[in-house]
Length: 93
Image 1 (cartoon, one colour):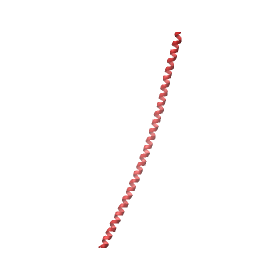
Image 2: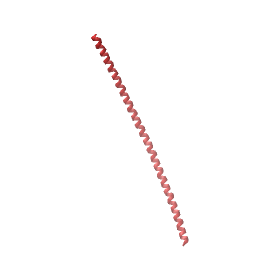
Image 3: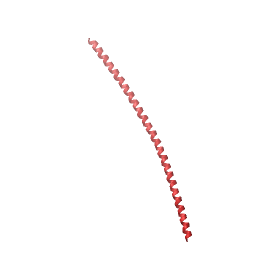
Image 4: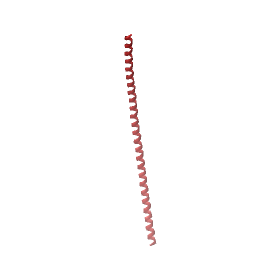
């Protein structure tokens, strides 16, 4: 009877060790997959950030050009009004 109990104990222990090893391997694989998912997410964030940066740069460039154009128009308008005022001044003398 003692041999049967020892054999049963050894079998139970072997089964427990095998299950523990299997659980360990599954945990390792899950951790690996989680790492890959995190890497993929970080890559996507990087791409989206770069894309947003390009959009912001383009918008800033367009705004700069719009401001420059608006300033030039205002300067031209002011110059025309000054010339008109000079002509009126010259004609009145």
